[in-house]
Length: 168
Image (spheres, rainbow, N blue to C red):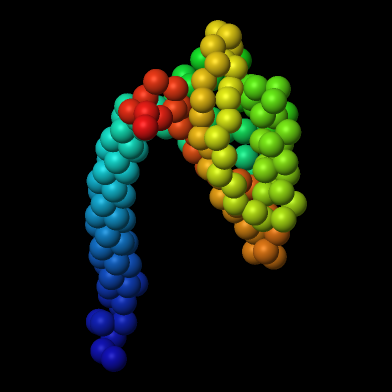
């Protein structure tokens, strides 16, 4: 190596490092733009799904063993005529929405799901916060942890009362 090249080596290294950093920054910006576009697409799909579910009076819910309450979608709140400000209900509180004659069937289905990993599908009646009785169908499927144990249940509820879905 010539003495002149050695003398400029720190500047050459700094230039190469700067160019590499600029290239990484360019790639990062590209990835961020792509992620933003994907997020916008996901938001559009979510909005479309929420709209379709509300038209069909279908709500989705989930329960995780590690949590004390269910997670209800907006449509589940609407079906139960529950004010969102009351928050998400606990599992037992949600089961209490069912007609007294249907509660045991519902509680057993949920317990078998959590204890034995059994999916469920049933029709039952609920009594809304406004005192209305509604016929619903609920379907749940288990979520499993890495060790194979049931960690939660996800599902949906359909309001069959006076809806095209419920008419024969």
